[in-house]
Amino acid sequence: MFFSDSLKPIYLQIAEWLETEILAGNFAVDEKVYSQYQLAQMYNINPATAARGLNILAEEGILYKKRGLGMFVAPGAMELVRKRRRQDILRQLVVELVGEADRLGVTDAELAGLIAAIRREKEEGQE
Amino acid sequence: MNVIECNELAKSFGKVAALSNLSLAIEPEKITGIIGPNGAGKTTFLKIISGFLAPSAGEIKVFAENPFNSLLVSVNAINLDDSMPLPAAMPLADILDAAGAFYPGWDGGLAKRLLAYFEINPMATYPALSRGKKSTFTSILGIAARCPLTMFDEPTTGMDAAVRKDFYRALLKDYLQHPRTILLSSHLLNEIQDILEDVLLINAGTKVLHQPIAELKEYAVGLRGRAAEVSRLAAASQVIRKESFGKDSIYAVVVRSEGIRERAAAAGVETAPVPAADLCVYLTAGNKGGIDDVFSQN
Image 1 (tube, rainbow over the protein chains, first blue to last red):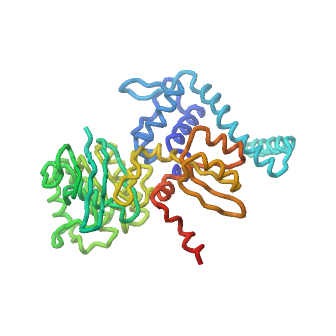
Image 2 (tube, each protein chain N blue to C red):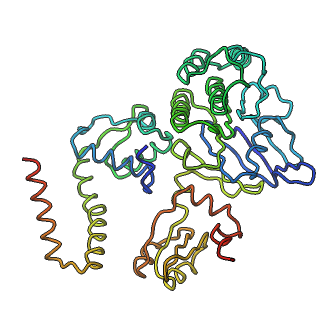
């Protein structure tokens, strides 16, 4: 399973994957998400690990529990995910980026230029 | 109620202590990996749980009963290993039928489908099977028996990579439909960690740790950087492993403490999670150091 190749705990990977699904609009507000048993089956993992991933999202208010029915997408989930990812994941990626740029003596302007160039390539690729 | 409880359990064979002072409890319907180096006592422990061996000292309860000579434990538990005394002259199909007559939860249809999938001839006899097929057959027996307590002792010995993968998937799928207490012994945590809930690490016959695998993965942190900085950081923590590399660099594994990542970042030291399998190796290596030490002495 591709999960094992990463050092990130599987339950965090599960949580992030569900967040990405929500961001992509694959789950609407008040829609039921996968159960811990479905996730265990899909990713070949222990259901307790899958439950841990679901519980993180419930604690953050991205999902809500209906007793005996499962977990559902909370209103405002997409905004919550976007906000938190900007704060945590994007920031961490930039910290690493800046670290490597410093080691290589790349200036902020050069870095911004590189980002703009990659964005152009991406846009051209989509056309 | 716990499925297994033991208290200061010990087992000796003559002067050799296989288990000593082992105390723990296994909760129902969890998959626990019993991890430890060769000779750690994994097989002896499973044999005591299943009632094949009597302990030398201490107490063990399985389903609240002493497992030795217990019919209750025999009917509700199965222990699969490669030294199972399966009848040599009996076709495999007959062995499966006999298991069906004994175990109340037996699923004969599943056993037959698995046998066909893994291309094992039901008319073959057990000694005629290759090593990998022997392991596959006993694993099928273990899954189809649906015992409330199912123990696999190094189940994948001799299996090729594809069969291993299929076996773990089959076990997980059957567990999801029919939750039960499963003990899986292995010296390879990597291979089984995804399907585990708990890990019991044993070494030299006693418990090193017993905790959810998710906690084990966050138990320690790896520090890598300049020797002086890493040593200073490590001095404030419990060091599990330390090795030097490059001209002036050290890799140290320490027990995770509050704020260690921030302190490391401030000192220009890189931090990284420690894979659970590596951590188990480090925790059971004792004071003997690593294989590199053997070579550094000449």
